[in-house]
Amino acid sequence: MFTYYMPTKVFFGKACVAQSGDVLADLGRKALLVTGRHSAKVNGSQAAVVEKLDELGISWFLFDEVENNPSVATIRKAAAFASEKGVDFVIGIGGGSPMDAAKAIALVCTNELDDEQLFTGPYGKPLPIVAVPTTAGTGSEVTKVSVLTNPKAGTKQSINTPLIFPTYAFVDPAFTESVPETVTVDTAIDALSHAVEGYMSTASTPMSDVWAEEAMRFLGVHLTDLTGDVSPVVREDLLYGSTLAGITIAQTGTTMVHSMGYMLTYYKGISHGRANGLLLPAYMKLMEETMADKAEKVWAILGLAGLDDFTALMKDLMGDTVDLSDEEIKKFVTMTLPTGGVQRTPYPVTAELLTHIYQQLIGNR
Ligand SMILES: [Fe+2]
Image (cartoon, rainbow, N blue to C red; front, side, top):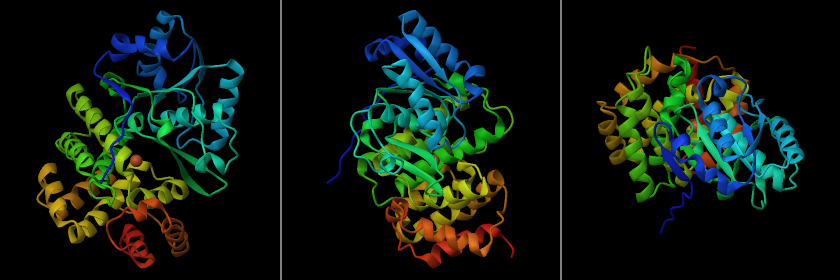
């Protein structure tokens, strides 16, 4: 038995906001725009949304202070601003951080939640959420997860509820054209990681596998096209692949790769995609033992000869080693073990195994 639920209405393609944005009028008369400091202003996404809102006579208020890996404090500040303005819905424009922030803000606007309840619920209905991705990676436009930084817990933590699936996602590849090289690589590997982890998960289903395979097909063909000038055609494939990978993890969640990677991001400042990319080869090595048929399928879809090929490619894209002390590894292992990502890993995960994988990242020690 399995379930499939993905209620977000997706508009995909060039100029989708201009063409299909009239549906925003269904959501109310006042909108909060949630962005980072810069990119939404230069890649055309904010302008496209504002033009449509103005055309529809919808008032809008801008909160453009979302940092990378947004904090609970930022969410509360934005929610207070949104409540003061009396907004009816929230539009997140940007990479994963502004979209995840928009989801959490929409939830905090309608729910009294202390810092612990924010991650556990129970939740009532949030304000309607609209997502406009400007990177090809997170897939947050089609997921029910918002990943935040919680200094009280000393790590990244997730809000996970079907209530925060965006109502609408406007997915326009033109908004990703000015993404710089390091972000293009990081986000593409994050998307690949979503597809691979969703495929290689105890929570995978026949329906999620369809999306995972299709995502790997669109991402895999471009893994050697991520540096230098990236053409609009490649950008479109990457964004399509990342949205499909998002639909996959909306069904399956992620695995120990993301759980382990969160530690590298929170404590070592390693970007989210790179953290996943550093860990993926070790994960696939385990999967070759427990999910051999699917592992073979992954290599075939990605056009690779096997694990060695994949490891070399990741090393090429992610750079080599990470500096980790024994104390850090011990702490990361203790924090990673109880996570859902570990539970969804189709392999008997032990502290020794996690320790070994973290140690491998250090290189020659
Ligand atoms: Fe991710």
